[in-house]
Structure formats: structure tokens, C-alpha cells
Amino acid sequence: MIASNRRRERPGEEEIRMKKLMTIMLGLSLAIGCVSVSFAQDTTKKEKSKKPKKEKKKKEATKK
Image (cartoon, rainbow, N blue to C red; front, side, top):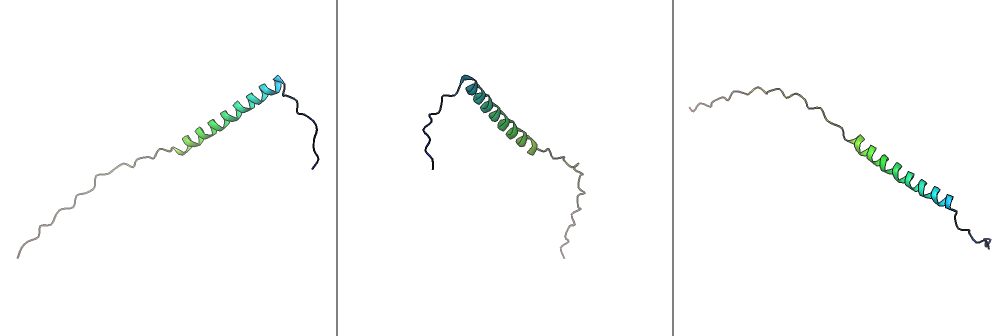
């Protein structure tokens, strides 16, 4: 492994602005992606028209 003696220079003002912009864009894209996925899963189910069921006539048991 080669040791580097170079000191990293401080980032310039333009580079700092670009990093902040990229951070905001990344955050927004993740937030919008999560919101779209959550709304995509909410599907409304169509209710079937409930037909009145025919009532069965009760047969009376006769005692013998």
C-alpha cells in the first residue's frame, strides 16, 4: 500500500453548494418514491352488489 503525503484541500464554495443540492435531490427522490409506492398499493375494491338471499322456509317438525 502506498502512503500518500498529499493533504486534501478544503472543498470550494461551489463544491459545497453542489453537495447540498445533490443531498436535497437524493432525499426528495427517495421521499417521492416511497409515497408513490404507498399510494400504488392502496387499491379500492369494488363492492359486489349484494342480492337479497332467498329465505328458506322453516319446516315445522310435527310431533307424533
